[in-house]
Image 1 (cartoon, rainbow over the protein chains, first blue to last red):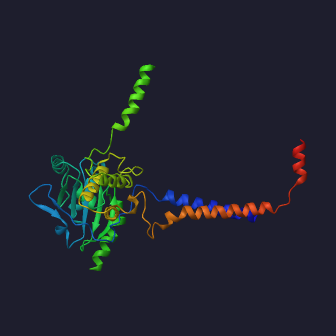
Image 2: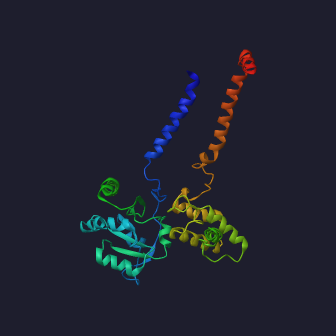
Image 3: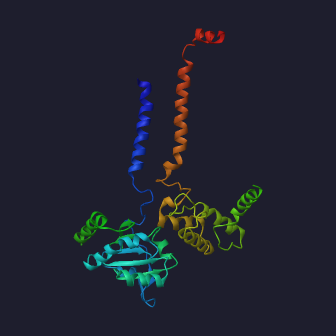
Length: 177
Length: 143
């Protein structure tokens, strides 16, 4: 009997590894190395007014969302109504990074679908996207008043994610102050 | 048939010509070599089983452009790797660095070989100590 003990343990261990691997969920969802760290500084020309800029300086002092979006991104269209809803309810200021897009198309999108953003920065070259470790739009970062990244959400933002992942963090930030 | 074959061969010959990296080569061959090595060791985060050298997703070309810029700015390889890891995490590297977190990746193969060797040693030694079954051997030989 004892001669089977070791192989049995090995097989059970292997099965456990496989189960954990399967339960891990989307293998494309990578943890952001920025969680708990200062958000990358950025300063981008505004989408609506290239003369002005929007960036870290505007976000200081309040908990805010940074939403990476593009007109070619299907998930962005999907999450757009929810962003509008957040904006209507004054839930949180949302700053946009219009990533790897063209200005005319992005402006038309805002015009047609509505503008949930305090302001969107235009990142046509993707430089700021790389600084934020963006690899697929939409991505949404929750940034504290001190400019620390609290959470990163991959894919379309929806009510479930908002209530489960964002609200508790926002509330604990509010109570800490 | 012959025509088809010609077409097939032509396609095969043409394949390498469709290079993905359309950027200009460095004038200094040493820099070019560093660039080539770096881009073949960085994972394309959007297409996870390709390096940014092999991928034509725009994220890969953006990252190639950044690496090119950093090399031109005179940054060293460790500095460039740092640049990528602070933004995308250790996962972006196909050749993980030996740090506390990734040590297991580097040690695991050696540990497994050691473990396997030990197991084999145990089995062989056990079998050697078993008495030879001469009757069975002879029976087999006469059959």
